[in-house]
Length: 142
Image (cartoon, rainbow, N blue to C red; front, side):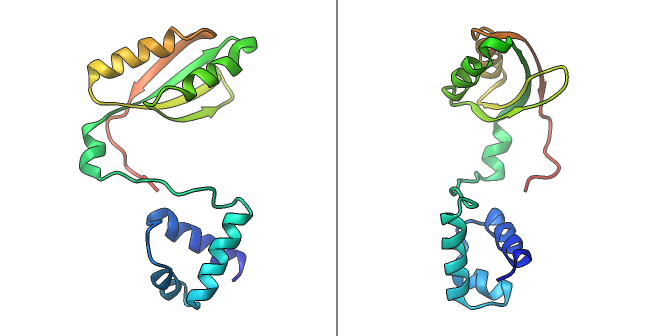
């Protein structure tokens, strides 16, 4: 398989990581054994590092999600990352350039829970300031 076929395989797995190897092979126009060996090779190379659960839209829509921009004190930023890692509502953490140091994507069951979560993040040792934006809708999710 070529690199472009690998990219197609990765896109198919992103869309549905539980799709059968036979179905992936059919969509890619290659043999089942070729797809199976390529998946194993991609896993061994660390290109595929794991598989995740994608929740139903109905469940995801019931959650309140937000982007939290965080400015951390430089000497404590590693400590902030470690503390954020321990918070189960934190879904993604990006280190970014600009006025803020990090973008944290969080999910909560309700506005009340989100409010408490934002207070918790703001109170972490090393967090200098935060700014949050509630996600109203998701237009593209790959």
